[in-house]
Length: 382
Image (cartoon, rainbow, N blue to C red; front, top):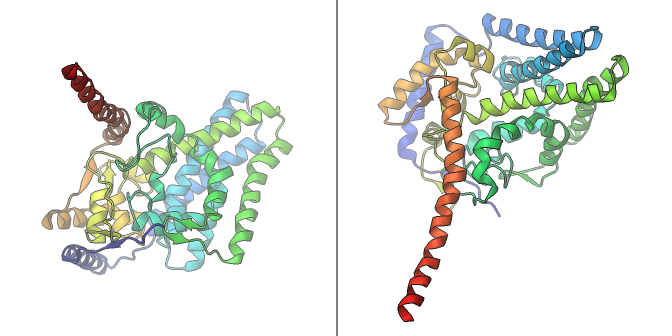
């Protein structure tokens, strides 16, 4: 039975108290809301408008197969951007101070293939609380047996090559989400350490919105489009692979890079750190000075700020990021960041190699020691 994890180092809790006071002061002095501003509404309109336009162009346009394939790929990419820039904030109740607005935008998650309700449990509650803790944070349980993200997981032969095939598996993430992941998570007895006790309406919502997605992206295109079944499959898979790869890369660069830790609770089930200090040690930023990365990633390139203040709209992360970094350094806490996306990607690649190939080689060396000793003993006895 998985013990409930507690964060016990109260001595470092003063960091978060100080940080919250400074961030609150920033919004008060600037007379700003922590929710969406005009720039955020423009972003949301752009990404949602582009996503809908691409969908209609595929459904109503009469283009060559190559153009249709390109549109399908872009539709997948912008599906990820809608998730990053609109749904993610809405599900965290950070987009608006009006619950109905957050709820409406949360439902958009269904249009990119995922359940907002299941995500709110897996991500908002489990991942944000137990970040990088094996057996509790299911975000690092990507493909058990195939991808190893924690030093506490056993290493096997195939994981020697995970730095090569992991990116291909990331591209399958959305396909799994659409047809498998939400159902699996929903009907588990537990999600992380959270007991699955769902309201009855969520059983209806799960199947209704899944069917809506299947209708819009499988049934309707097959009815409307003058294409063969194999052309449809190619286009559908291209959309899913593009969306999955974008989602997978952005999410993994936040927690599985050099410098982040994967702590384990002690025998009593305690993490001997304050929760906020734990977040600073397990979370990383990338390309914070890139306006393009900030625009496309919906603030997910600033995961440090997001994990500390998930109910603040990501449009404000650049401003509060300066406060977070200064306060972290003041309290001798790490502020992990990569200057560019490519730096973060390279760091993630090295982590995959370290946790896979290098870990397996080390395991083989350790396993070989008793054999060598036995051989020496036999020789000496003879």
